[in-house]
Length: 334
Image 1: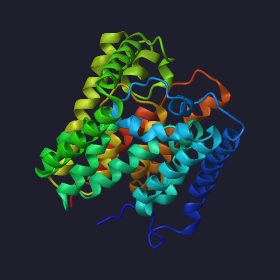
Image 2: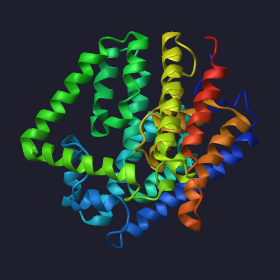
Image 3: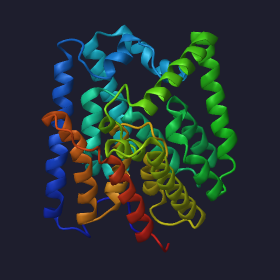
Image 4: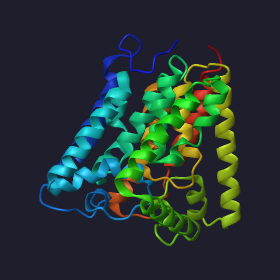
């Protein structure tokens, strides 16, 4: 069985050089962002977390970010990146090199978002879903902090017949909701739902973001000038295809089902950003040579757009679709 790692026995050392260079560049970007944060609040997403602004997240997420306000901004930023980054690196396992080299990881670290944390939860939960379903479900239940990243999980759980994962996930969600209710009150739930509904309206109108800031096929379709209905049809068709692929992979216990599911997660919700593509790290570790390079290049484009300020499309959803299709094709047999 092919391992989700770069194997020195299978690849000459020189093949790793581009990945090492990419990892060094991405690591440097994150390091510079941390250094810059020491000078005071930046115009990045983390500032919303640190400042306690109303967010389109359910109250369990506030359990994580509230303590950050107790620290000076720069220390809070560095602590957040270091803590979530460490969880991410551990969850990558032997995929640490593609984990560092993933351009989406650089984007996430640059703006202080939560992509490291959500990737760590998803990777870890999926790895133990069939062998220890109680534990896998309990871990995956933590994705209630960002539930639209869990939309594909019922397909994987049912296909794998990991029934014990369902009550475990419900238990985790119930516990987090209970603690959040005690800490922040019922009003916090009502307010988060109100803010979330506003974000849904923003998604339909494109009033809050440029279409190429979003990393979904719906947004890509709108950037290309497609009517709203056609863009939704495009997104829906690809989402259904991704769900079918995940079902096949888990029902047949195919190789690559974990990186495939992580990548397919990016094809379900229309509300995604480039930093969410950290979930493609396991796909980068699975794919070989030029195929991994294709995914990497498609992830570089939205990162470069930040620096050159060009009206380029966000190609992260193309990277996810390519990864899902390629892994599903390569993993036809056990």
